[in-house]
Image (cartoon, rainbow, N blue to C red; front, top):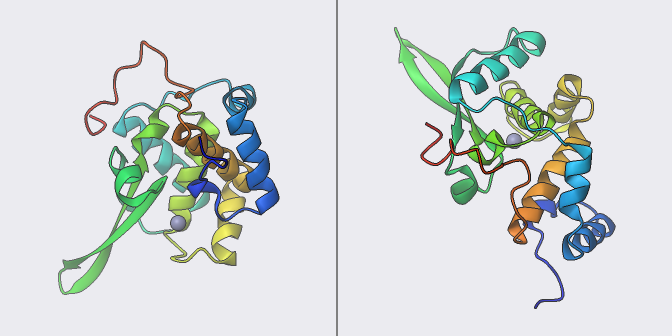
Length: 184
Ligand SMILES: [Zn+2]
């Protein structure tokens, strides 16, 4: 057994916080801690429900931003990009002028997660409609849409750390069987 758990999802945080997280992981208490904070899973289990949820947030906070062509769960995100979500922009020629086509993909792990986690990821990807980089304006926009953005991002990353360390999935029970193949 190694003395330290690798914490790829927490690398941007201060060492003291990483150490605390490692303690919670190694003692096996992180799962209960997360469940205590977020006992309930959301019900947005299909791409259609996810699309409705994300466009609802967009209408509320970013009505004038570019329209979304697609919003889906993606089972390959974590493996390929090690990302929670992703915003894809592709150029499309429309009668002589190029139009951007925006797509939001959210890791299918978050089909079974608390609503605040899903909201944090959705808010992050929506903010990319305006700001490409993770700069100050970007995070201000995230906090405008979700005041607890930073806390929720930390908790979401703690959940991924928990899973990485071999912890069980916390918001998925035996009756759930709907996220096997590409979220369909
Ligand atoms: Zn980003």
